[in-house]
Image (cartoon, rainbow, N blue to C red; front, side):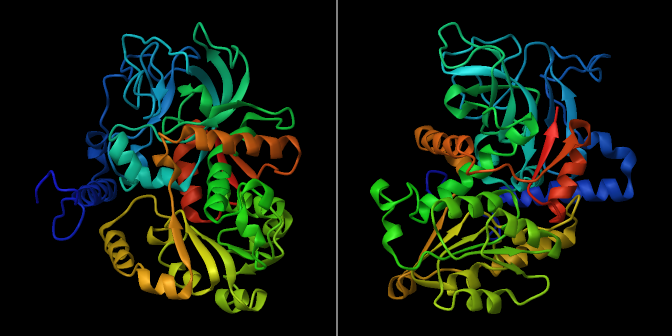
Amino acid sequence: MDKNNNQRWTILGQDPEVLLAALANILSWFVVTFCPRFLPYLLPTSPEEDQGDDATSIDETRTRCISIGRPGGMEQLRLVTLKEDICTIGYNVKHVSPAPYTPADGFVLPEDCVVVKNLAFSVNYADCTIRWGLYESAKKFVGYPIVPGFDVAGTVERVPANNSNFSVGDRVFGCTLFGAYSNRVVIPTIQLRKIPDCIDSFSKAASFPAVSLTALYALHLAGYFPGGVDEGGSRHKFKNKSILIHSAAGGVGSFLVQMSKILRLGPIVGVVGRSSKVDEAYRLGCDVVIDKSSEDLWSAAFKACPGGFNTIMDANGVSTLKESYNALAPSGRLIVFGFHSNLPLGQAMLNPLEWIRMARKQANMPKFDAMDLTVSNKSVLGFNLSFFAEEREVLSDMFDRILEWIHNEKLECPNVVEIEMKSIALAHEFISSGKSIGKIVVTT
């Protein structure tokens, strides 16, 4: 295929990068399972890493981060120490350096950035797909090596000469477009806010940014933010304000429930996959909670809202997308922001059988016909905030609204499980299991 053509190259109908990721993961599985003594050969290093005798010692003046050198299993989550004066950095700070590291010979901090001494970062399911080599924006904008992660919470360590937004020592939290698995990150100031006094720990602060912004943007696509008719939320004029939220006790789901309550939607129907999550979903504000492990999901959903839902939030993928679309009322919107069920749960690494299963799931993904969308008066919208490098003003406005809700005690911190940085593989294992409630946060 012509490289200038907008269509992508394929091999036997498959994206070559996905095939390469599959081969890399299968190689990891084979080596770990049958010949682990060769494992060190599968762990690429980078010139920015300190390979000296003190590389494993803890030095507060040096950056320590989790580096992923190639697609693979848990073995790729390497805790490394970087050379002096090197920090991690997101892909949208190209005027300083390409991601994932700042230059080894030092750098001039621009007026729109600060260096954050990062004390806590959250773990998202996206981080597992980055490790597997399946996260599109990570492949497109960074490649390997990569330092994953979006959420940061810590103190400002360094400011530029003409900065007026922050001072050294300020407690801040916010987002970076990769690079958060680190104790020292260069971040644009527009992506940071001071931590409100009502948030009493850095771990709690790190649990907010990415998932709350994802939830609010999803509600924006649903037509409910800005909230209220007077602010442009015209969908509030519809009589049907029902909303169904899959994974209602998870990271994004916990904020979707709370924000739906703030925006006066209802009934708010939350779906959970384990009985242990039911109470948490009710506590967050659900009017009805469906435990799909003990009852039929769609029978219970129809009972809760016989006329269909005006909004359904779905990050599951193949397991529920088709039925979610069918459960929409006329004028309903299906908001898609993930495909968790397309990927294996509870797998430390992906063996050949898992890749075959994923291929079968991908082949069974529903396709939505434009004519059917029109005659049934339904909409399907999808998004991924990791592509929003050029839309910082949009997310900044949303961050301000989230901060306002936190100050007014309308939004509360989700349940937080803390894990030390040296146990990052445990964090990935936990979030992949589907057993976590709320957010997993790693302390540096």
